[in-house]
Length: 556
Image (cartoon, rainbow, N blue to C red; front, side, top):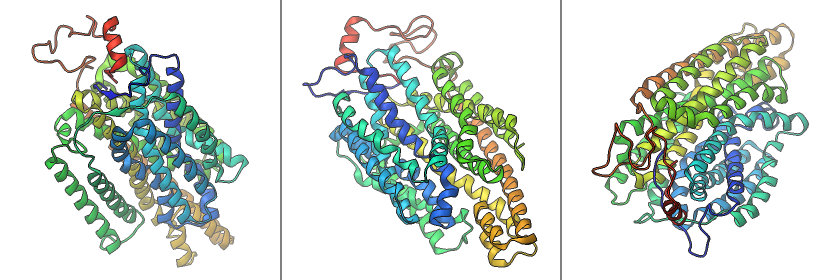
């Protein structure tokens, strides 16, 4: 991830990174990022409890899970550019406050609609927090070696946050009600607000031109329309239904207008010319595919562990813990792997390893197999984080130096967007494969069969009400249909991952550690200025380090 970001810091503040508190700042930023990533999946193991308590419909249940990453992804560019204008720390602290308030509303939501609204507010808070974390991290670590370590930790936290969610959610559900998965955010935010105000430096970007808030809202509305239409299709609604066609067409039109608007503006919100670079556009696609597989499969896996194998929420979280540990290990080792193997080989390897993990998990059936699950989740965690790290690095490397901030916003948007689409897409595939078997059980009345076809949890409820042989047959058929749907979903996911491996062949073969060379500087063969003979970045001279402290040049 190579780029140069210039931050305009208020003169009264000491140069960021010059003090001894920069590692404390890293902890604060990682806690912020962890909460944002964690909330994307902390509700997964609580879905059965939420379903039993609030009785949401199939579409409402999808929105409860999916609205958070969708809103967050839609608003990342808006709040990222707002932070450049009014101050990144200010937007970050406001995001903390909103995140805490929304968590309290979600914890005590009396209806599914209230919970959806609260999760949407959590997405707004997350969108305010995420863009500021990487910008501030770049600012407080002027030393390149320390910065590389800090970004490795930051990347690992970003990748494992989603995997930590089921474990934390399972622990809380074991001892409290489902709303407790949101209450855990409040004390952390109460600590982060004063600590962040004291320790985090304020900074603003120096981008010229007006802030295109109209374009940001247009993109968000377009994205909402498209995903809403996809959700309805995945829920079994008719393709010709006005509530399906109109959102799809409106969303697609708004996104088209957004692209045309950005191309015409002298100072666009997003410089779309970056996508003309094959490595940049390829990296963005790889990030979306990787996150699509991670979050979508994790949601389905959590339901499988609880509803098919009968594990408790805490046991479910513990079964998913190896995925977390493997992803953390890959994140911490990512910088060294990228320097040694290069983006192309690293991302291809990550996708292939993840596809192998997914195919391994097709061995899951109606009975528990701890060894199979352990192997599959370890491969899945290591492969996905390897892919994400390499793709994210390559994307920022291909961005022009003066557009590194926009590239980072696109990467974070892709990260969250992939998570949201993954839940919608793989959930739709799962429902399409599951419903026919659950709705064709002999001896079950038609209304009961239709209800059982919505989800495995509803099928179990219907079977309990029916009782007798018909109830037992429905329960058995629904469980078998869910396992069949799981296998179909895994095969679809494996195909997407292999497609990602093919896409990654367009990435650069070697990692370029230095900034883009100016005219007359070496472009290959011999080391460029600022690099050692081995391709490693040379340490800055005292004068360079002093200049970096006042106006940091950050290579991520």
